[in-house]
Image (cartoon, rainbow, N blue to C red):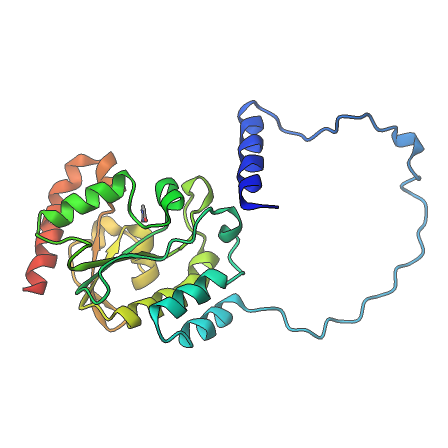
Length: 249
Ligand code: URA
């Protein structure tokens, strides 16, 4: 199926679910009495020989692909071609990064949302616009001194949370991404990014303190999408932005 057909099919299915459909019924009736009796004995199927081909290990494959990418272009090509992540089938775009290569700050978000999926760039929707304002408040911007990527390069359906196996198979690419861009500090933007980098959950407890991952200082911050829902938490975000700024000066 073409990518657009997939979206049309998914939208139609979602519409039926919204209407309360719980079963799929064909358009033409089926006379079950005319079908061969379910109890009819079938000839025993030959027992298949055990498969000699080893099952693919997506994490090991991602590690080897990421390790052999020597440039960001090669890394993007290898990650985009990686076929083990189901999210790829439902996404419109592969979202790799935005911002300044060689910037001192790398912001690691969670995953593209609807706007990012449409535009092929991270943090371009409402949360992204707030992120740009937050950065501007400390005289930073993606056009000058910030590089942005996400844990997952494909949008999860309905923006659901990333699954642990999806994160595990994308982490080797994220790690190589960090190595190739060589920032001075990392910002773990939101709970999932924080968990992916630090293997610790609880962004409201972890935010605002410096941790270490990938040999670099990491500051977990409240995700701008969370700040849009909980504006009172902007005070905490401001403290974290100041901590970032002073670490860099
Ligand atoms: N939220 C994220 O974490 N990343 C994006 O790219 C957009 C929204």
